[in-house]
Length: 187
Image 1 (tube, rainbow, N blue to C red):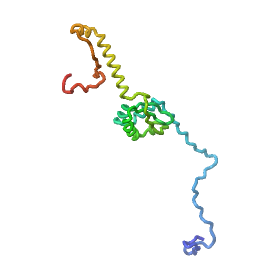
Image 2 (cartoon, rainbow, N blue to C red; image 1 turned 135 degrees about the horizontal axis):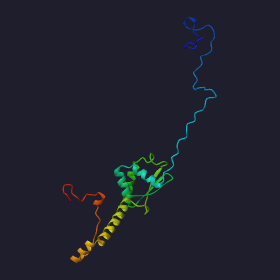
Image 3 (cartoon, rainbow, N blue to C red; image 1 turned 180 degrees about the vertical axis):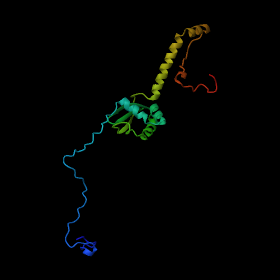
């Protein structure tokens, strides 16, 4: 008989039955499939190997905003990317909190497989952007001085005027820096 809300069987005139019936089977919470059906095994996820240290540094710089990139490149030098740690060297202690603040806002996990943390060290390893730029300026100025000293026209001018070449600085106009040239003038 169908159980009534109170647990008693219902009379036949109310939809009950006279005999005892088996309880209704509950729906199975799982699916039964034949034994011959193949079992689906998902393909293994590709394992991303940690990038080479120089590539890791380029990837890390790629996710920085222009301001963050400028702060980090000017004041920190890349040292290594090993065991998930991106290591940088900061030369001047006053810039350490600024560099740390710039790097804390960046999601390196999305671009560096295996990234766990970054580390700011103090030391002389690597080369900051400022140091690289100063070194390039020195090389450019030395090459400009050699070119001026080797110039026949300058040698005649020096001999004619009785002077000497004291200071030579390379032009930055070749690099696209036109900050010393006015936009309105034809210089």
